[in-house]
Amino acid sequence: MLGEDLPLLELQPETQLQYVAEGAANVVYRCSIPTPNGSSSGSIVSSIAAPSQTPKGLPRSTRGFLLRLRKALPTTVPVRASYTRFTSLIAPLFAPDHLIPQTLVKLPSSVIETGDECLRSAEQDGLRPHERRGLYLAPEEHGLLVKDMTADSVYGHDAQGKRRGQGGVVTIEFKPKWLAQSPNAPLDARRCRTCALRAMKGGDAVGRGLCPLDLVSGDRERVRRAVGIILAKEKRLRQTDISTESPLLLRDRLVDFFLDESSVLHRLRKLQTRYDPDGVLSVALFTSASSTDTKMPPIPPVTPPSSSPSYSFPSESFLVATTLRDCTLFLRIPLSPITPTSTSRDIEARLGDLDLKSPSHGKAEYWARIERRLIDEGWYTGTESMAANQPEPLETQENRHEGRRWCLG
Image (cartoon, rainbow, N blue to C red; front, side, top):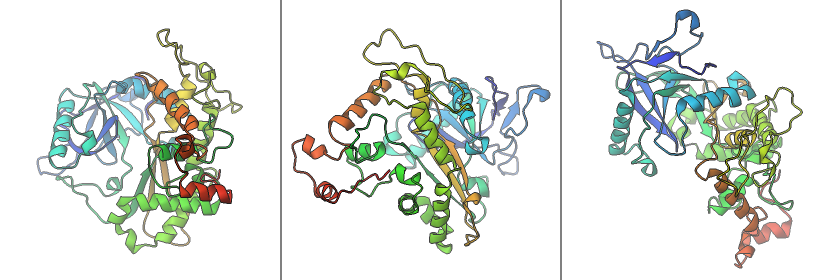
């Protein structure tokens, strides 16, 4: 990972792109350099720094790295600025092996056009999600090379982009979301922040969705339930040779991983709490989050704009917490052999999607409105039907009668 503000690598002009996936703000491509014999090899980057200035460990080939490019949205931040914020505010909070390595790279003028062509082709081939279509890349001078955490990176690809080799690893990715209750939640809350929002959006039925508090509860049965939900939703597991292994052993290894208090997920929970002790509705958002952890780097507050007097402009500490509540956890688990002696230490776990959140374009006000709705409409307490003067649903009646809670943490 580079700590410098300037890129030391430049993408080769002849680099070919293949659409892999996309999120709301970025698109990820697999890169290759064609060779005369039709194979896909060679370096996709060249150094634009003196050899003595080039750090060790930078990517030099297509294998193991993907290119991430920014979409043309008013809410996205230029890649170079986003990378600088990541290296200064987010990266120091974690051990390097808990983060997806990323390197700032300068782009030739042709790459954005090539990337847009890939998106249009993906639309024609039905590979691009319907809700993402029609939106393309921002004109940019920089991109990010990020470590490929998919199973594909283990096998490699031929010139047509097809995967080579046989199964040997399973990859899982999901958003842990809020690993601690919202500081603004009512004292009698019966749902955590994630479950309350899911209920408000009309998502999973009561008790069927993933509760992040289960994952960090330290209770084996709760963790096992959460792991079962994650595995059931992971479509890629049904497309690999997991059926030839023991699903129960895979599940138990994941349970042990989440029970380990030294895992990155427990660190993530601690940071979410440290950097936002007061919540989005608090007027204390001008100040940095206090912390007794001397290893935590201080984060200065952002000066609020005079044109927005209706809400407290969030400090960077709050924006860090908000970023940590929307990151993605990537897990790579060796499939063969899965035996009773396999341990959670075999699992590679890294966090990605850690671009610092921006409060601009009404985002901060939106966050506050959502939190206020969750409180006022009874989504935290499970009394949303009563707030709307509707009959209480059977699930709520049963849980109230038996004194149970949906989120047990």
